Image (cartoon, rainbow over all chains, first blue to last red; front, side, top):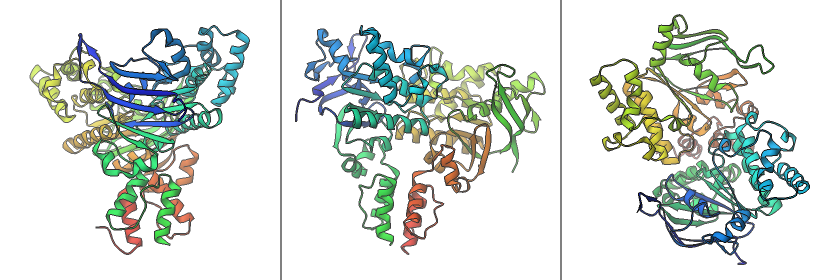
Length: 281
Length: 287
């Protein structure tokens, strides 16, 4: 594999309260994220998945082990700006991420802070808004947008920095189904068309199912890592760590318990219907 | 069935008479029955939050009436106030509304406001905490030391402590993982059964309402296009999808099966129903 865009090497982390270390939130996590890939990280609340995400652009620094972003050691303060330019973060609540009163000014905020010439800022903002399908809202007020639209503006604000990797920490948790679908479409387009590496932290099984690779976290460890089809086939294993599988897999799993000959790796509606069709026809 | 809440030709217009005038609810007319578990679904901006804020008098109708146990909740100030204790409203992300120094004080805020004596306030606070599975040890902690899921439980306990006969919850499971979702839903189910309370659950998740509620109300663009049992409502497949609402995954899979030419009833909406239907089709019968 060529140099991974993100590499965690025996990463361990514990929060310190009143000077005392609490039990580790992450224990000995070693992962490599390939440049250009779309990786989902799934885990229950408190599994360590958000803590892991925050190490990917040096919001948190390891208490043990190392994290490298495009080969740069995140704990080296001199490299902080380069690390943050390489990996952008999008958070759960769009309202907490929007700073300006006009959409295009919000998107321009980061490149302005990087000291980029104004002509280029103009170009970057236009490109970023086009990439998330929000060009027609460039001069609108962000607070009048829907949740999904606001989250796309937040993503545009990150894209305008031209990072090679975007880490999204539960970006759809506060959105309705239509908003969620908009954000998922945007993320996939960015990955496929612009080759941006995407790390999606989520606990929605259906979103995780759309990634190329799925990492499951529990108790601060990586407990599964593979394609969504392989990972979701382990129904019992996921249940043991407090997660469920998509309803399609659950149905096939239960029918297999009933003695029917069905595959477990049908994630989409079509795959599930086709598997059942073969049995019924 | 005894009606507990009734909406009569309810309309609500925001910023009436200004250029921002917006009709959030238009001539909404329906009843909620004592002891039922009702689901309300609708997109963001459909008017569902405006709707539920009329249930306990947080918003006043621009026209029309809201009746609680047959009486107009806006008839007198006293009645409006009394309704707010009888109809409890848990907002979205209620954990952001915790403010007291201890969990105990936060939960007891509502009952104290009701003017109950100390013994009764204490009984209700401990009862409510037990309902949502908060151990005694947590009660003297600061709510801000708790995990997100626990904070949400504290907020729900604060409403339950007022002993409402109608409990309205706006997306109580948003942002929780599957275990957290199950645990909150089972707390709500326990309250429903133990107190014969009326539960109104607002949700984005078709799968969640499909397996939880007795009856569904669909809100779209300030109107109520469909009400009925989940099976009845989900039979409007294409129309629901046009409203941006989607169908439960099992319903979608069964529609595909029909499209492939399998003669099977597409009105299933839970995994258990789907399993039974497939087994029946194969002549095996559910175990």
